[in-house]
Image 1 (cartoon, helix red, strand yellow):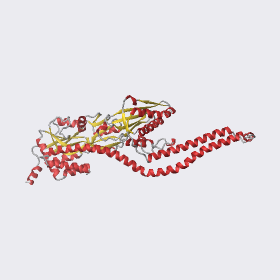
Image 2 (cartoon, helix red, strand yellow; image 1 turned 180 degrees about the horizontal axis):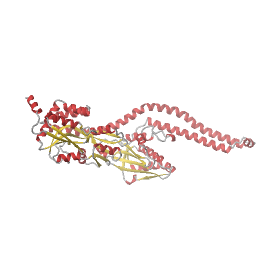
Image 3 (tube, one colour; image 1 turned 45 degrees about the horizontal axis):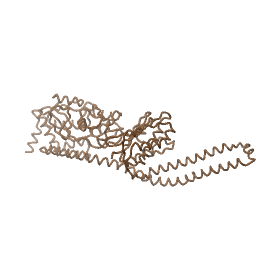
Length: 544
């Protein structure tokens, strides 16, 4: 009986001798047209297998996705590939009633620039500009998600990534496999990807309801290809055999084999994925914070021991230099006073061209230089010890963000006046409370503002301090009109021992310490900068 069924399956279809299949010309690795004008991709090869099994002619029509769907709606194309949501909904551009035969599961990733803050879930996109492929499944998912974002429509997934790469959009949400292929084939190196899987959906061959014979051919062929393992081998050749793909392949096999209960299994799987996504979101956020702390501890384990030894070896002789310099200045001054008051030495001093007043001034200056340099060494050693062996903050409480900023500006006021930099503050305009350690947050703001002061021009320097809120965080921003940073400098700005002021005695530990303090507060820091325009440093502290 099984042999008869297989022979009937392999017989050429008499009713339908041709399938016209429409593909997106720029949707690699699923479907696209290569530089020789040939259609390629996983979807293409799978449809070729379907046509081969039934001995029907396959005609492939390629164009931009919008044109393909319009041709499908007009009846000029028999089959297209579309994404189907867990509730069975599809993109509204497909206006015809359709029958869909699912054959693969897919999901999306979020892509941002390397200099941008990490994205842990969709809420982190609040207030950002997001590029998406128009007429795609992602458009449907984002519209129904009701997020406070600005959408920029691209004609393809590749163009959406380019908009982010060129700084014309803050983020892009596209198919994960397409994004991976695009980054590799186009050598886009300034983007990073959030590995959080978003918008799980099935990819399905869609045909109009009246194309009964084509539906039967596709349905029977997919079952046959799944049972003989060819469907999995085809997926492996295009996407590789990661554990995630194996899991999706297993789910797909179950869906095809158990055709009677397929829809119920699919709905149950989607409910599980949605629940899992929530758990993954929470766990991913926790792991990000724990990973950052663990990496910092590992990096500082050796440095802590080394810095303690260095501090001991330097502080002892440096203390002697400070005390000896002070005593040397006092003794030298006493000797000069004695010399001046000794009668009969005036002629000897004159003959030897010795000016006691000049010597006194120079000795005072030299003694001050010794003292200042020694104190600078002490400060560097202290900063190194603080970085290598930090003491975690233990006292957290609610505080007024405005009062915190006012206290910080009071501390920074002498330096700003010295460099002729104006400080503007709007933190008191809104009554916003922040939960944290006041001394630590004050240390962070002082460091950021002092960096901004040093970056400002010698005349006309301006720094703006502002406090705002997002849906999940309180935000303190420091914006200056200084010289700004290049992308290379920006990417390393908060790394330990990186500084552009090495000749001025900078150790490059300030922002690294700030970053760690903010992580202690379960928050993060975001830096935006443009050369010759200025820099904005934003501190995000979670709302309580």
